[in-house]
Image 1: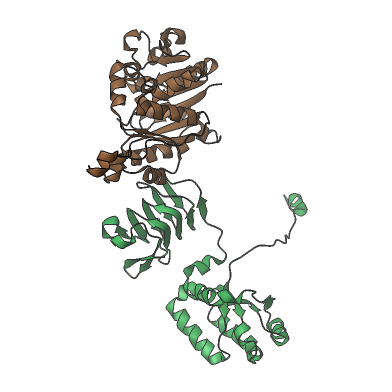
Image 2: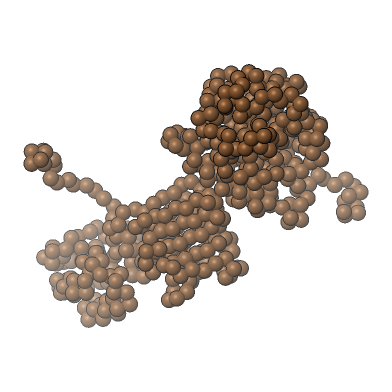
Length: 240
Length: 269
């Protein structure tokens, strides 16, 4: 046994693409940032717990906030974030980051998407897909009488889900065709799970056990591209 | 090796047997040795549609139970060369079909024929499952109405998961849609689903559209495959479907209302 282990490689270096949350700093005041962080964390404490983040300092690069970078990192850690590194900023920032034990990532090229990205990072639960493996992808149509369950993750259906078919996922459900059957997301208690589809003709949709049937859907949404999220005790179905 | 083609639908009464007879006769006319096998044990109809009901001595079940040889049971069609019929038993039920027995008969037929057309019974029980199990290709017969489309969808799911090809991890059964009893007038009135609607729901290739036609009923009553009624709209639509099945490209016909003549336009109608 020991001999077998000896010949096994003990290290492997691999390039991997990961989704990481970027925290854009838009105000150079540590107090203001701390207050805003507290507010966000209070809204969704579970979501932020141990969330790896990269600090995008592009917007505050000209300020002297870099002097407070170690303090800022500590402040994030105290709120159970895991600051991984910084992005943007000049030589001062890079030195400060290295001193604070943070990595330096190259600045973003297309700053146009910055605004959307920030919102995605802070509001969309999808950002939590940080380190989980990719969900299940189904390329064939899901036919009447068939049932597909993506355990432990998202379900992506590239085609239609027919009337009489049922798709379930612990995470989100994305359907790039018509949803004619039943779709149940977050079946093991994830209230932040959502359902997305290109053409909404579902028989039933459910998120974490809160369900709604065809009869209750707004007529105007029938056949439209929609997303479905849980909002308190009811489902929020809106056009995409 | 023969190609095994199942003609199936889930729902009954949509035109499976009419289609089996027409496609089989069409393939045979095109020079391919073809055998029609009736899997609807207990409710045998194919022999009636083919007009050979008085010539049935031995049937599919007899061959499965080795009470007769294939040569004794195969009925040669009198109108079309290369066309044979293996009738179902009327006195037995579908439990008389066994997977081993069906496989043995199909293997034996494969040696002599180019195409084996399996006429499936309605439903998704034993007879239907065995009719599709060994298939290489499937023709899904669907009427343009919601229940038929849903049943076809169900059958497509079974074809994708419960056939020999699926079990062996081979390339999937090729699935093609044949829309029957299509009436452009009723589509226009909103009483029927359109070709586009059905194609969107089932998402498979369209082999053909057969118009609702008196010719189908007349041909069935006369025991003639409707494809042999070469002047009729349904007969021509089946000829197109067979040509497409064999790889030819043909435009779909009979999808639009006939253009009204001068009087029609003047007086509405």
